[in-house]
Image (tube, rainbow, N blue to C red; front, top):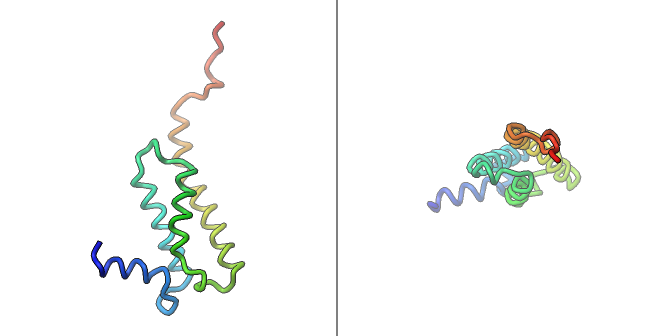
Amino acid sequence: MERRQLFSSLSFYSDINQWNWQTAVRHFINGVVQEYSKLPQDARSTLNILKMIDKHWKKVNPRLFDSEKHYYLVLAKSTDLLLQSLTKEVEKRMAAFPSIRNIPYIR
């Protein structure tokens, strides 16, 4: 990675004077979605989404938020949004396969 790119990606998350919490959260969500979309289909799971959320949220500077409570509420709401949005795709993929309950029992 070029030094300039690295600096801009790091400063984006931590430069309080230049970024607000909404911008940081937008970049956080975009980072998770982009990383998730690069995963192979069989690796797309709720666990991997949570791992990506953890990885990307660590880059968000807590000082951008009004309070510690605000920081955690935004994390919770963002996590919920990402899980709901990204797991819908997983559920659609799983719906293509018949459920084991729908397979008749043969004696």
